[in-house]
Length: 160
Image (cartoon, rainbow, N blue to C red; front, side, top):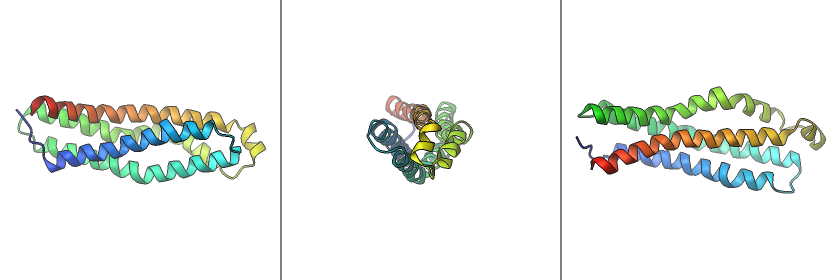
């Protein structure tokens, strides 16, 4: 009932590590530093947008790659337990894209619409709470994704 540590499985873990690491860096370090800085609101919102756009360039492919790797492993699994485990990890990996699209995108659209506003307009629109809310949701998304990683890794550790 063991699954060999294949290169496809390893790629899934590496892809998840990229997503996880990027989210930890952005949500755990950069956003708190940004929000606690003395930067003008217009600078904060522009930096947030750059972090978001650059993160999306890495995170979306990482989520798709990890899901594809685990689903590939599920398809070629030799037993039902392996198949179910890989389906769960693949599902959790891809679910973060749905979470982003359904739960986070309204706030993202709102924040991106604020980028060209003046400092006074940003303060009146309470831009900071929008960034803070986005960051909380990003942390939740990271936890969802981490569950897929932990599931796959735990399976590999206990079954090898």
